[in-house]
Every structure is written in C-alpha cells, then in structure tokens.
Image 1 (cartoon, one colour):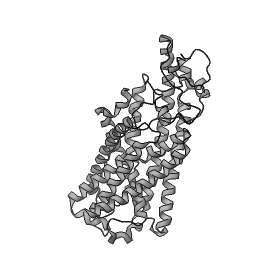
Image 2: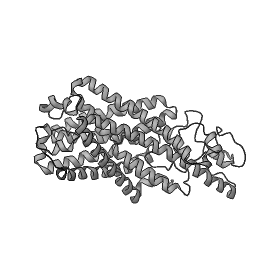
Image 3: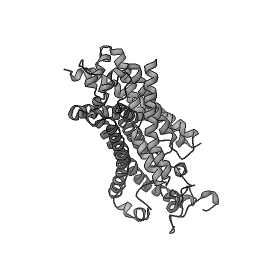
Image 4: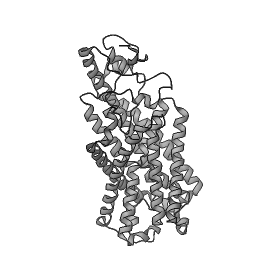
Length: 260
Length: 151
C-alpha cells in the first residue's frame, strides 16, 4: 500500500488540517456575522461564503497541479537520465471515460523535492481552510429553513423570515437558494480552476513557457482534493518516460506492458 | 446590546469545533477512500450527509433554529433562538456541534469533485452527484430534526 494513501493517519497532518479548518471556520463565522448584519440574511451569507470557497479551492488545486507538473517533470527527467527507467506512471488523460476518477488518482506516484511544500499547502489550505470555510450542512440547513420547516413548529412561522428571504415565499426562496448555491458553486469552482491554470502558467516564468505548457491537452487536470493520494508530483508521464525523444502525449504509457 | 466580549468566546468555541470537524473529515475521508474504489466520490458524500444529519439532530434537540448570527444567538432579544441563550451549557454544546458540522462538511470539495467528474466525462454521474448530494443532505437535515425533536 502506498504511503500516500495513509497520509490521513499522520498526526502532524491531521493537526495541520485541523488548524486550517479552525481558521477557515472562524473566518466563515466572522464573514457570516458581518454579512448578516449588513444584509440581514444569513442564507445569503452562506451562499457567498460557499461560492467564494469553491472558487478559492479550484484556484488553489489547479495552481498546485501546475506547479507540481513542472517540478515533477524536472525530477523525473533527472531520474530518467540516471536510471533510464520508466517510473511506472500512467497517462493522466486517458482518451475514454473507462479510466475514471480513481484511475487518474493512481497515476500519481511520487512527489518531487518540492512535493512536501505543495502537499502541506494542499492539506492545510485546501482540505483544512477551504474545507472548513465552506459548509455543506449549513447549506442544507438553510434550504430546510427557507422551506419553512422548523424543529419546533411554534416558531415555524418565522422560519422563512429568519433566514432573510421570507418576502419571496418558501418555494421561490428554496429554488433561488438551491440554484444560486449549486450553479454558483460549480461555476465558481470552474472559474477558479481556469484562473489557477492561467496564473500558474504565467507565474512559473520562463521554464513553463516550454513545451510543457504548449503540449498540455487542456488547462484543467484532476487532483485529489481531500488528500489520500498526493497529486502534486504528477507530470506528463509521456514526457518524463521518454524525455529524450518526441512523444505524442495522447498515447498512454502503460508500464505493465513493458513499454519502457 | 451585545458586546464583542460576549460573542468572541462563543465564536472561538465554534471555530475550534470547526477545526476538529475538518480533522475528522480528513481522517474519515482517508479511511473511506481506502475501502471504496468506485468513481463516485463517496467519501465526501457520506461526510456531507452525515454532517447534515448531525446538524439537523442538533437543531431538533435544542428545539430552535440556530440563526447564522452569533450576536442574535447570544443576545437576549425577541428572536426565537433567545431561549437557549439563558443556559450557557446548552448554548455551548449546541454551538460546538454546529461548529463541528460546519467544519466537517465541505461545499468547496463537493463542487470541485463535480468538476473532476465532468472533466473525466462522467457527465451523468457528475449531475447525479451534484444534485443528489444536495437532496440527500436536505433530507438528512429534516430527518435529523425530526429525530432530535422526538428525543
């Protein structure tokens, strides 16, 4: 079993995620408190926090993938020269849907020398801060509240207004809230990833303006946000395995076939 | 009128509980991933639904809706939530549980996982996960509330 799958049993990392989560939750409470005061609607505050957090996480993870891609490439290039061996990577962008979510996760093997730093950023900022900053249970509770349901039915009449969208009526409030959260959250995550990819490319300077950036099939890649497998050392295996000769990156490199 | 000194300790308590929730999520997610190899991001789904159930249960037990505003919660005003502010222990436990659920569950990761399913061309699974998570979490809150109110 890969050690990367057991990161969550590491006490230091658990503490890191906990600290990041506490800060994220604290910031959320402050933001919600402030927005509740100004907007007078707690549900609106939760939507904004969740959308902002989805954007931030998308940005972070995509930027980390960009950085890891470059570092991983450098590392394996060096190792490839030394050992002349494939490092056992799989193509990260299989053409078909048969290689799915977990298939891509398995593509990741080793973190480069900078892998530790990116791993700590991913766990502390991503899993911890943004994970604690955003809240799914709060989103679900707000939906129930807006629908007018309440644990003590005596205060049920005020439930809708308590969340601040009461003037719209329960059905419209719930529909609006769900649409804003789900569509807004997904759009924000995609937008954050696009920004993270763009900024990462620019921020990496000269080195990434090489074939690296041009040959990447798309701006977005998979990364495991919660942490069992370290996605950060990953690069384009086709390049690293056969770094000394041109390779079509779309062709899968399967180490079990004795390809290398 | 509520002063910052009255609210701050409760906020710190809820934030610390949120940190505990985030750590618990990290641990639980890793353990589920060791056992589940499917394409569906089951670990986040389980975590979000379980956290929503616990939050609903907390609301049902306390008997009121926790307003998002701690100022409103702590202040002795006419809000329906003012009832629990008279008992600091009830308020503390309720806030710790609400804070825990907030940090335990995560909206950002769920949305990110939807993008990954879409990018992996698992469109229907992405849509199902996207909408299904929300539906399951809402049902979990309602069931938790009903159970909590019965206890």
